[in-house]
Image (cartoon, rainbow, N blue to C red; front, side, top):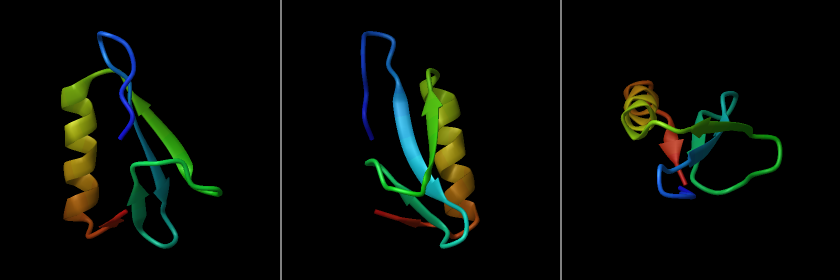
Length: 55
């Protein structure tokens, strides 16, 4: 997870075919950026519920 600035910018990269969430840049993965930490955590929880793997 990368965070920038005072307000924060949280990023994850997602591969929906392999069901993987990465906290660092990966070629071919979709970048998702969040400026709201609660929304970021909610998204991570949703991927966890769908049994995505994390790296």
